[in-house]
Image (cartoon, rainbow over all chains, first blue to last red; front, side, top):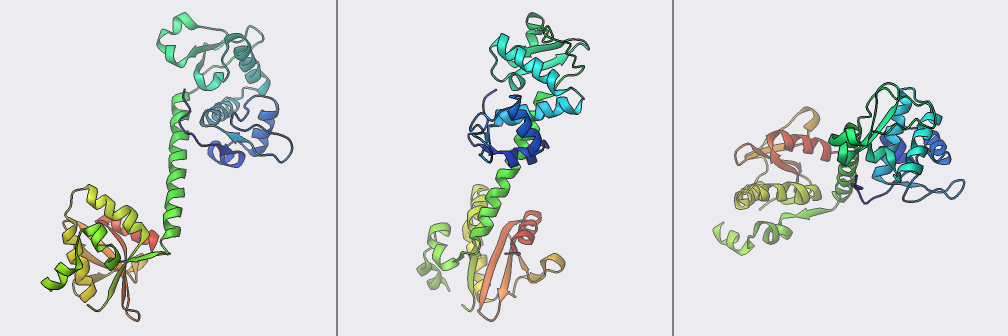
Length: 187
Length: 97
């Protein structure tokens, strides 16, 4: 998955976008579950900056937590994947699904060839995730929320500038291609 | 010419480029705006409710030019130019400023 946006998002924004509280983000960062990839924490009060991909991961972890998967279990899966499969950011790059007993992971690009890529991520523990994480829907919802946020910023900027008023005379040449001489003759 | 027609920035940045893009001849808009300079009350109607203090003029098929009139300073302030629904939506938002 490529980073859809080249802008960074701070903790508060990620919190409002995903529904994860700031405390949760702090905790997940400390536990190395989801860490900001653009600017990491450098101590108390420091700024953290998340990428679009990080936000997808936060939303995914939140989805798993909402479905009562414990943090240790999620971490177990992620650690196994990171250590054994060379996936630096497994959540946003893989399809996570389950047969009710094992966690099965497949790269997004090879989703259709899933039979060749089954992996059980619970060889290190008893990890069961009985559902498919809807990465597509998660990505779309975050994408839409960020677009809406950008539109609001642009609108606010535009409204700020609305205090600057422009007279018709000043723009008739530039915008309407009109020479005022022509119109004064016609009048 | 009695009144001065002025635009808020949003009209210049959003509304007019949108009209240009749709291929409408801007000269007709210009002529309508010149009419407002002479008499903003002649071919317009007052709005009510959320858009009180706003007047609207029909332009082109289905388009509206929405504006506010300041009779003391002789100013006509254009707040939106767009198709009917969009024009009113924008005017409601922008007239707060």
